Amino acid sequence: MSAQTAPIQPVRVGESASWTRKKAREFYDAPFNDLLFQAHAVHRQNFDPNRVQLSRLLSIKTGGCPEDCGYCSQSAHYASGIKASKLMDVDTVIDEAKKARDAGATRYCMGAAWRGPKARDMVAIAAMIEGVKALGMETCMTLGMLDRHQAEQLKEAGLDYYNHNIDTSERYYSEIITTRGFSDRLDTLAHVREAGIKVCCGGIVGMGETALDRIDLLVTLANLPEPPESVPINMLIPIPSTPLADADPIDPIEFVRTIALARIMMPMSHVRLSAGRTAMTDEMQALCFFAGTNSIFIGDTLLTADNPGQHKDATLFRRLGIKPMAIEAAEPGHS
Ligand code: SAM
Ligand code: DTB
Ligand code: SF4
Image 1: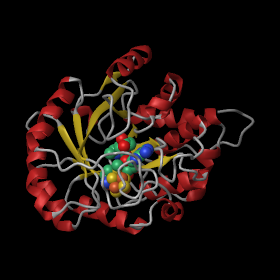
Image 2: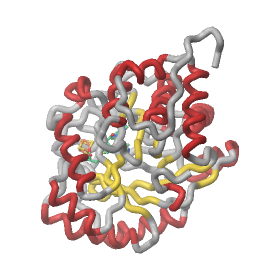
Image 3: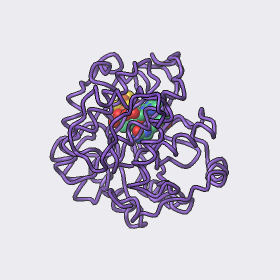
């Protein structure tokens, strides 16, 4: 650590004390090298720094969503040009999952553009979970809000992870989404946790939020009764015709600071470099891996937007000496 700068308190691994905004801000605002040094040290104590978990996404029900999330191509409130479709049939989903497994993904994440699932959808959803698990993959679903019973149904079908993002700080949330509140998100997260499903929860940066909003997003996540096992950090993919189409891109250094802070505050969680990698240089992604990110989506599409694709990622991994992580090593707390 530089002798000229005030030392930042080292983080004890596994520390479960609650995080304050002030403490988080000290890390976020520290000289970049100090922040990265600390984040990387925490990362190495908990994970193999040269292994990255690979997930693959599929949109099982696209577009026509009644919610008004200002970043989303799938909201019916904006004319983004995405055609609405019905829920995909179970066999197609399983065939796609097989392709993802053969391309190296160990977790299959299925997303639906719903406010929440309807009772009539649950049979097909359960069959998708069972079918994908039978391929030897971990399963993740993101279907919008869940009540207690729906969370239990997903658990019974064998679901490993549920993705439900809080997206930003509580303060900024209502500027991005008006059709549901921040507390609705927390309620669903509690139902998922109580049902015994692992939590995947993160946010989006680059939506015009302040550094303090990014810090508060991470403080909320780290202070959940149990931090999420998986923390996706998305960089906004600006979608034409949505309210955030012209948002100013985030400074890459601020983005890396956000990743580093997530790693320090949630030392045992997988931090996923999620949406937005097509707009990142290899050097920016390399810094993110150094700062502690250790999960990505592979394949050339996310839900509706582009992702770097197999060739680009294979080249990046080769350049950095990074290898895919096996399922057992992806178990929370494994090092
Ligand atoms: N409808 C469900 C929900 O909102 O929970 C699941 C699907 S939703 C598309 C999953 C997450 O993708 C959102 O919470 C958001 O964090 C992220 N996302 C959506 N559009 C994005 C975009 N244009 N750029 C970056 N992240 C995005
Ligand atoms: C998450 O945090 N990011 C993924 C996943 N969870 C479901 C979704 C990214 C979506 C990017 C925009 C799109 O493909 O439409
Ligand atoms: Fe619907 Fe999810 Fe998109 Fe919001 S983020 S509009 S809930 S699909």
